[in-house]
Amino acid sequence: MGNLEEKCLRFVLHYYQKNKLDTQKALKDFKDKHQISECNKNIARFWWVFTGVAAAIFIVLFIQYQFYEEKEWTEVTADSHSVVYLLPDSSSVILFPHSSIRFYSESYRLSCREVQMRGRVSFSVKHDISRPFTVKGELSQVKVLGTCFTIDESRIDTAFIRVDSGKVQFSIIGQPDTLILTEGMTVEAVKGQHKLQVMKRSMTGNFIFDNTPLSVVLDELSRYYKVRLAVDYPNKRLTANFRSKSLDEIIEIIEKVLNVNIEKVR
Image (cartoon, rainbow, N blue to C red):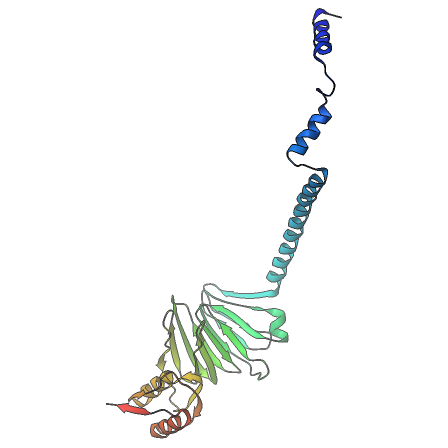
């Protein structure tokens, strides 16, 4: 034994006291001081493993869901040339350049005829009273049973709709008011403005209103008959169908149905 080893041994034997160099006891004292138990360690280890497994499962399910969603959508896009497309119910669509439509293939065939669009698109809808046809743009929404019409949202924050035949229910997305449009009518809707602007009126003199604010009704009648109309309760709503009636007859009917007073303003 060398001198160094001998000195070390003497040092240990001289200063050794029972339990003073017990590493297991020191580790136990440290755990007791910081309230660390084997149970807590096991629980912590379990939660770390559980969290990792749950995250992995979520990622897999999310990827499968995304794949399913993308698989369900059918999308048609027109680039530099117009595209004619036949929907599953034989309704036809003309997509003008830089426009697109998309729809859920399965639900369109079985239950709900709903199409989302961008740009300018013309629709010729096959009549099906059991399944109304709905078109949703970025600004406007149209519901029909069977008709021909064109929606143009190619201009920023502005939507135009022109009805070529039949009738449609037109509204601005997010607004409760609706307007029934008939053959020959063209309407403009501007984002941020609640009032719909009738650009071209029906030349037949027929008016169809479905829960329409009375102020909108009088605006349409005023434009057609070229007279300014005022009413004492403009927020009341009207559901009616006027076919080839004179303005005085229409005013009389509205006044009786809604109990209001309508005046021609000079």
